[in-house]
Amino acid sequence: MDILKAEIARKRKFLEEKHLVDEKKKYFQRGELLAKNTEEILQKVGYKTQESKESDQGIQDGSYQFSSDNQSILPRIEVTRRLRERGEPILLFGETELQAFYRLRQCEISQPEANRGFRNDFQEAMEQVDQAYLQEMFANTPASKEEKQTDLTELDESVNWEHIQTMAYKMGRNNKDYDMDVIIILLTYLLKLWNDQISNYSKQEKMSTKVKMTRVIYTQTREYVKPLFRKLKNRTLPEDILESLRDICKHLLNRNYIAASDAYLEMAIGNAPWPIGVTMVGIHARTGREKIFSKNVAHVMNDETQRKYIQGLKRLMTKCQEYFPTDPSKCVEYVSKKDRE
Image 1 (cartoon, rainbow, N blue to C red):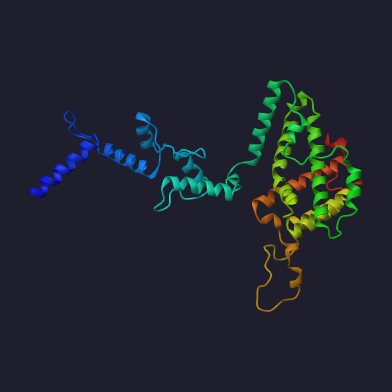
Image 2 (image 1 turned 90 degrees about the vertical axis):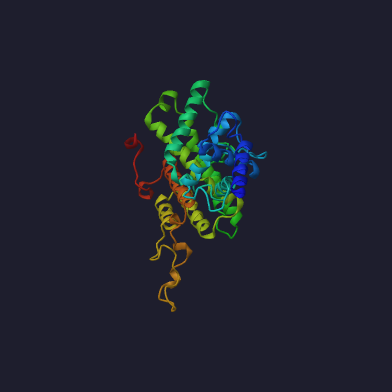
């Protein structure tokens, strides 16, 4: 009996310390006890909850925020949503919610493109164009070309088509850095021409569906080729892709768009019987095995980032044919300007 009385007294004292019962209140709900225990655990681990009623409601809803001095911390609901979008478990066994937030940050830093795959890139580009159009309309002044090209490589005004053709004569002489510089200049020049074409439209033309879709495709293409520009600037582009890009640029500058399209298809989908890159299926080398190498690998299947900048490159090739026409026998799907309009 003494043990039972001591246990009852201990539990009564425990409830009084938590302010769950007093002289006026003799009963309490189990949820109140769980909320008190949760709050104590959060304070021990280092979480910071909102004060008063907002804090109690936040704990029950799971919307409390983590305290941090160095960075803005997302609410638990937002952390859960982003983890689910990436296909990650919202909470691992033995993991605290703060550790789950840090795991989300690590995923976003190491795989920034993973979450983008779940979104509609075209819809995102459409929203950017709508936002830019609203800014122009409210400001009553069109956005400057410099503002539109802040993320692109600055191109000297003296650079023109003939200048790039002259530079291309020295390509393919075992100078990879020079080849990458010429590729950057050519692609940037095509983007600049495309941007200038869109900027020269009148306000009425910009309101049309056709021009709006053109702006959306341009915005999407500019985002797609950013990883390619980054690899070219950092000199980290793979050798096989660099070789294909070199051939494509040479054919474009010679206005041989049929040959450029063939080189593009060879880079994008390959021409080997093993598109995944199988090099040995048995212990004995078979006839023609030397033809299966990285040149014949379908790079468009490697990852989403490569797929995007390869698709963006094809769009720039199409615009190049539009801006610098040549003999119809050297064009891909030739359509005259009169028929296009």
